[in-house]
Length: 211
Image (cartoon, rainbow, N blue to C red; front, side):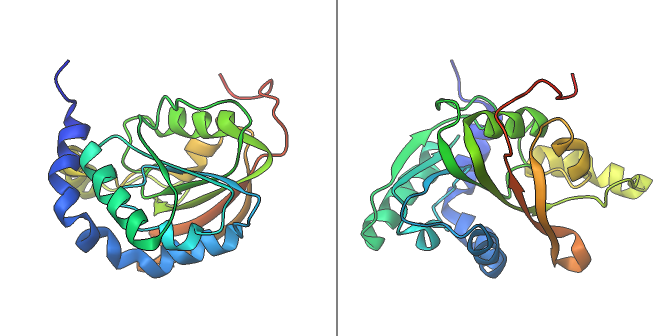
């Protein structure tokens, strides 16, 4: 089977990914430090890219990093070696996580929910693999909840979705399809376009999810 466009896209971006995503280091640090990773945490990095978040996760009991692009993960493995860290790096689709139910105590989603084809499916997968009481650390761009993008933004979103990201996703529309609860939500950059959000899983029941 030939590689998908997202696979090819991020393989092409891999050499310059640190230059692009590294601009958000302070916000990424803020997101993870709010989650408070500790020595007993089993951590899953979804869409880990080249491993820019690794320095904040050096003391965890288990660290699994996933990405759709092998080229990204090759750079992540080199970064982990430089940092002296043990990381299980796996090629994986965020919308179909090859991971057990109720296992991870912390899942990191940085600049992922605005990128994947189906953010609802992605977050529901995160909910599935997250242990009760577990946390989700999110840093991403979202349209203000309850608003409709103007026509110019809708038009701009067409090429941007093909190239890299969706600028018109509302977080409430995504999290509402899960039982994950918002524990913290703060503006992070560009007048609140980027947000740092912390979620918690209160139970492993899925009975009252929206269909």
